[in-house]
Length: 339
Image 1 (cartoon, rainbow, N blue to C red):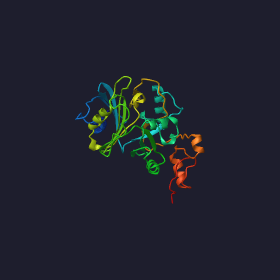
Image 2 (image 1 turned 60 degrees about the vertical axis):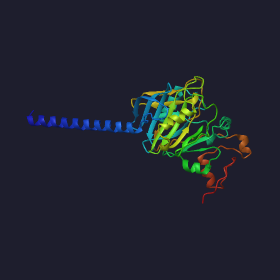
Image 3 (image 1 turned 90 degrees about the vertical axis):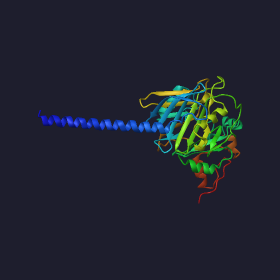
């Protein structure tokens, strides 16, 4: 082989190596930049915690693992306008056990990067006795969103249903739980019920003004006397800075606390308070943007429908009503007719 050809081959190999090396450098650079931007802020005057491990999932979602008050803590952080959106799913079976196996099945069925517990009730099943029981116990907070990570919150029954459905759109979702912790920089403690000093597992939705959404989960249970009490929750949020929080909302926690994640190498993990036998109907999960994820399962009490007093309603019910006579048959809802 002529020297000229050998030199040409060597030069080509060097160029390929330089390009591959450059791409690898850029990947590492942007990953480190995203990790830094998505990371929880260092401990300030809030509740001290320790982050032991950070993992970037699909170059989009940061999973941080650590501990707080001697219990495990996990945080999922992602950009509001990024690749992934928060959606709500319903279980394929009705009320399956909240086991690691069933969670992995639901995550696979949804092609979910992450899955967490949602709330106790939703508008499509307001007639359910369980939903009414939880509302009577004071779990009146409502978190709802569209399919673009535009998420809002309110308190039942002081919610304009028409505005809620307009916000949600055809691919939106809602879930009812404890309630608002912080909204537009202001601390809200009206959600508090029960013993404020009782430690428990917590699931917290947080959105900051710099466009970051976080799901913060802490392990624990009242039977173990481990977890965060009410004031601990607020002290933890201080690390994010109250003035930087657009919305913080307390989801279901305790023995229902679960977080599923899938690493880039395919490894699946489920963390949570597996302290007793639980069942579930719905959950929140992370899916790629523009996924058609909504699958409402309306549940109405036949006797309430007969009396025209059903409270259960879906987005489709709302749309049909405003383009007809404004009434959702069998329910208490009457909307303005769209012109």
